[in-house]
Length: 195
Image (cartoon, rainbow, N blue to C red; front, side, top):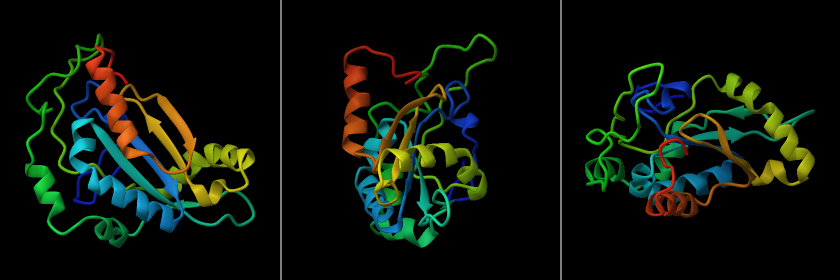
């Protein structure tokens, strides 16, 4: 987990019932693709927040003798993707369902559930990049076997609120499609608590 503004969280902290449930979208991509994806995420920040989506960007370095290595992107990359004043404007924007005020989850059987805290920006800087690299190495290797252009295209992994992998795909995310999927599930009365 991580945060550019001094807050840290583990992936386990972002599971449902722990006060900050989010759909975590891991985006591992080379510099240019990651910049473009972060700019698109920044343009959709209010919608991503409303859909409880948290982006964790990882910069993939060109493969040496094996799979590509991952590291936290430079903070300047994130700052460059955000229009001036956008973070404050997004944090102050009204939401259709303020998470800090509405209980979005039924109680868990083993622990008292906590209401979700409101998010302020949908991107978190990863901490301990070496551990991220180790954890995602099998995914990166599998992607490289599937496509010779995997290293250039990047990899997206979406973790549902229950902590399970919802989607793995080559390339960077289509942010609007992710937001629309959550909205469609909610409108159809389907589970958005765990998914």
